[in-house]
Image (tube, rainbow, N blue to C red; front, side, top):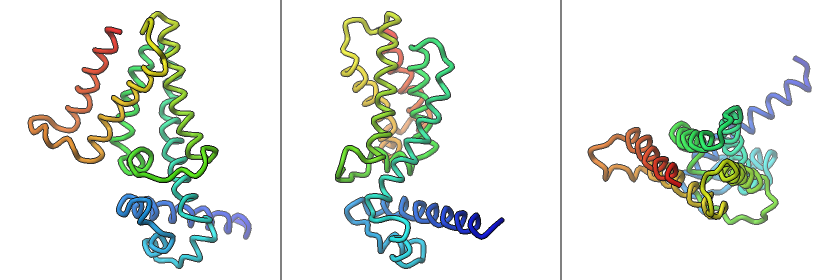
Length: 202
């Protein structure tokens, strides 16, 4: 490995270390109480090292957003081979819920940690919009196939996303303990199955 390649690898490894440390700090402190200094402290480096790679905490937060949504979209795109749009829609919900179970930290940052959005043109916002548009387009495909007649596609997409997000948010924030006779797995799988039953009647 040459000098240039080695330096590039070291830079990538440092960015990864910063992002992993920042994810932990954002989750512990929230966006407003997180600073470049305590991110640096988390990974035992000076704040100057962090500033060499990222201009501010907003850029770090947006990069974590982008990573999370990229991972989610990659998993959702696997469903493109499912030809029936309604079956793809049902599978989309299962993938979404499984993503939250497997990537709790990412899910919390993507959906549950507040950040003042400075510009709708930022990368995190754009890729989140791509994920929402994917769901909206899928709902319209279902309508073209005869499902959800006379329903507004945007309102229905919002309702479906809200249902999936509600299931995931309760899990990620450990709010499912009130259902003492059911495990998280049972609540998420069977709760979503109950929601699908309602969709099938639409």
